[in-house]
Length: 72
Image 1: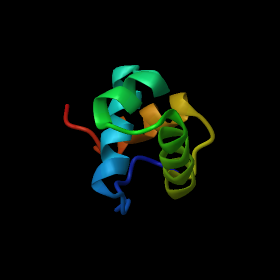
Image 2: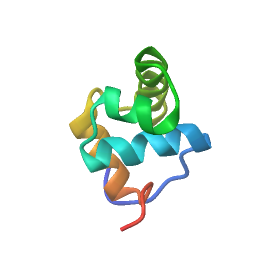
Image 3: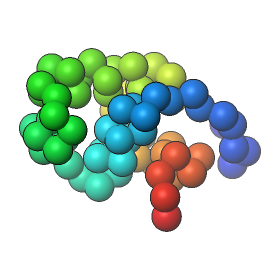
């Protein structure tokens, strides 16, 4: 994939969840913080994994940092 940045079209809610993953939050913490159910967080994560072509939280966190999806 390389280090080239590419545009990832994430919704504001998806960006919130990505920030939560990078911060190390569990689904329950994100649900409470963002006023969602845990199932809603799982659904958002599934969408984000698909959009970013990753399989898990670690890959998502690394992808988010590499592609500047979260503030430094």
